[in-house]
Length: 67
Length: 250
Image 1 (tube, one colour):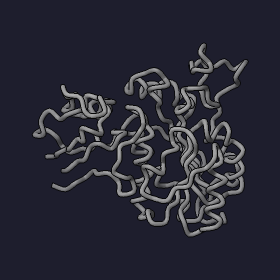
Image 2: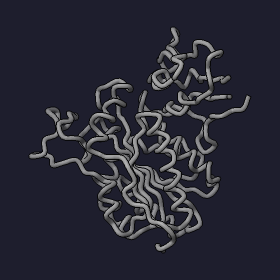
Image 3: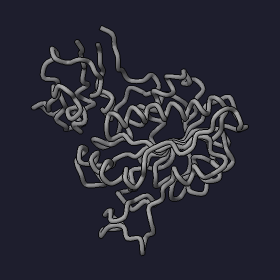
Image 4: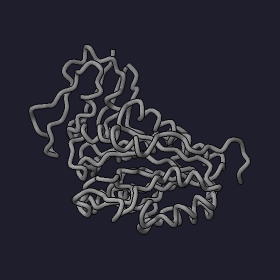
């Protein structure tokens, strides 16, 4: 089991994390952040394996991963 | 649960000014991770080039010197010779290193200075507004080549890593990309290896990282990653072009 924490104020919605997530758990939020982007959110933490691919591809280092 | 991924200690907890999907942020992280991995934070000095890479001093929690446009390898040479126990690296883009700084990089490599160069190649001048760089691919439209780069008028894109590898003074020279997780993992190891060469006093190490510039390419970040795969990698092949073994240098 894994857990990710997304810093929604740092996210710039480039969608790299969503494109590499093997379980397709990451999607865009409906609310904008202070930078004016729709940041990503995780759908459910139950299925996250903590593989950290999302964090590795994040250019803004906005994701932290626990496993 | 154990934390398996966190912000490297050498990277300050501030947000980057980079555009969405720009690989500069990823490269900053890879360099910071290499510095943390070898516990070099207290004795590392970075030298920033001019361009989007200019704000290195804002983001790294290390000492950083700012060099005039293209002159980062010359400034780094001075720092390393005056303070040989420090780890010195330059962080330069392609407009900085391959154009105005071509002379400095070639001579620094040829002298075999014991420092590391991080070269970010996104085939365009980023900060100044998307002008054509020496690395711009044939046919690529930019603000100063709106109909695409034409070799009759502008010549061919320069392959820096191959050129640096031909110089006798170079100890390590490689090109990596960041468009897929697999390439990213290789890039992480290569950046680490470049710092390792310097720590072992092996001489000049050079890493070229193929990066995307979604804003100036006029693409979304995912399409820009695809362009790296389809257009950049065929012209700029990935790999290690030179790696000196043992301690036969310096």
